[in-house]
Every structure is written in C-alpha cells, then in structure tokens.
Length: 396
Image (cartoon, rainbow, N blue to C red; front, top):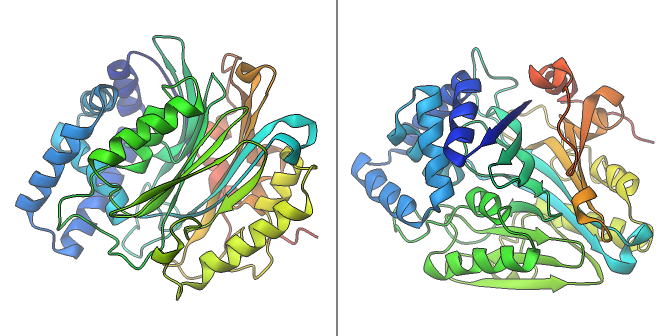
C-alpha cells in the first residue's frame, strides 16, 4: 500500500496512475482472472455483464479506465473487466463510525472506516504482501480544481473511503445478508460501490452525492449487498442496498455505525454471521459512551479496539488464517463545519493498533493544502509492510 498522486483531466489522471502503477495493476488483474477461472464464470456471461456495467458508468469513470489502459499498456477490456467484477469476486468487510452535531467535541463531523479484507493462498509472488490485493492511497486533483484523496485497489476507478475539497466524505461496507453474494448470473446488479463513491466526490454536498447514488440504484441495484456513506459538515447519509431494496438513514445530530449487517433492512441480515454482530455492538458501545466527546483521537482509539478479540470479531481485526478478514487500513475524515475546505483525512497504513501508534505509520492531508513532498516510505509501500501485522499490539 503506497501513496500515488495524479492531476489533470480524468483521462490524464488515469494515464498517470496507469503509468505509475502498471505492475500493481497487472498483478491485481492477474488475481482477478484467477478468481474468474476458479468460479468457472463463462466468458460470454462476463462480456454481457461488462456491457451493462459500462452503460451505467459515468463519463469520468470511462475516461479514467481509458487513461489507465493507455498509461499501463494493459488492454481496455482487461481494465473494464477488473472494475466490473472486482467487487463481486472480492467483497470487503469493514466497520464504520460517524458522528455529527452535539455528538462530537467542538462541533466537527466525523467519518471513520476500518477497512477489512480477506487474503487468498494463491496471492503469492512478487508484488504481493501477506497474500492480499495491492491497495493504494490516491491523491487526485482534477482540472476543475477539485481534490479527492482516499484508499482503493490499484487499477480501480473508485474509492473504498475518501474525501474531497468541499468536505464531502464517503465510505462503504459490504453487506452480509441471506441473499446471494453475486448477481453476476442474473445480470441485474450492476452498480458498484467504489465507483459510486468516487463519482460522489465530484459533488459539493452530501445531499447532492446521496441523490446521485440513489438515481443509480433506481436503475440497477448494487452488485452485492452493501452500505454507502455520504457525509458533510451537517449531514450523515447511510444507504443500505440489497438486491431488490434500498433504504436511507439521515442523521443531522447524533451518532451511527455499521459493520456488515443492515439496521434499516435488518430482515435481510445473515444472523449466522457472528463477526458483524460483535463489531456493531461494540461500535455502538464506544459511540454512546463517548457521546459529546468524539474527536479524531477518540476515533483512533475506536479503530484500535480489540474487545471480542483480537480476532475476526474485534474492530481492529487480526488473524493468522490468510482467508479470514483482517484490518488493513483505517481512515478518519474530520470535517470542519465553519471551513469545510480545511477538513482533513488521516490514514493509517496497516493494522490500526500498530500504524496509529507510530508517527511514521500514518499520514494526514488537509484538503485545501497542496500535497507537498511525501516521505519515501509512503511512496514505496514500506510503511504498510512494516505495520500490517498478524499479532495485535497491546493498546492498554
């Protein structure tokens, strides 16, 4: 996991990212192709699905894919297939917190996400670390002056969590439901959470962002059940989407959280899955206990929490089992109510309990400041390699 920057039109940004990340994108696409073979998905079926996907994609997403292809030298069809299918074949489990209004200290609004991913035994060789997809932090400046910073996978046109210069913050969680985890065979679930989040960062308010996403969801449900977050200085919108329903929570003063279970569409939840239940209960405990005192420092504490573990059931997740989900990064977005353009995004690279505890394990960006020289360990991925750990740090 390393930091990359790009600036210009969407096609130029895609070209820069493709050029800088050609090897990483190639590795991730190779992994996706392995997953396709393992699942036994028919090529004709993929081609039809890809066409549905590109028909729904925004112009900016298409331009990014074109640029990624040109910059990396990888075919456009491969870039398209990767973006269309990654979420279907690699759903992520995460824990997300939000606080707005009187819930926070000083009246700022907060969105925090611990990003959890599974590994695979076949993810071995040069370019991979601890059997996981290659993740990156993207710092993008578009030709209209907007700035978008967040975490994603190399080669993706979307974000898993991020913020723009207007103080709009976004994040997503996969949904652990009783429904099928893939609509590929039915060809009706096309909307991708990462792409919807990145497109939402083209908006200047959370209201504009959530309405953009809802317009997409009325055309096609999410590829896999999941949760979307759209937050600004005064609003927290949480969208829960199943394969045939969606619902929206709107918070203007208070707290809310999600793991991988729905709150509004709770009849869809897979109640046999223990980890989402444990993490949701603990998240609510932490938010309620600290109501009125929530700030960046408190959220750092929350992200390092090992209650019910350290294991798959804790907010900061660790496991010796490659195929179990572990926390690979943590993102805290602090939105300044008076001056949203001065909002900040802080990212811990690796296991939060280790990365937040070390000065060189995390990085902070203020949205109105030019990105200055980034320390080499953040550019070459060595920070992540040092702080992604199977063992948990004692945080007490």
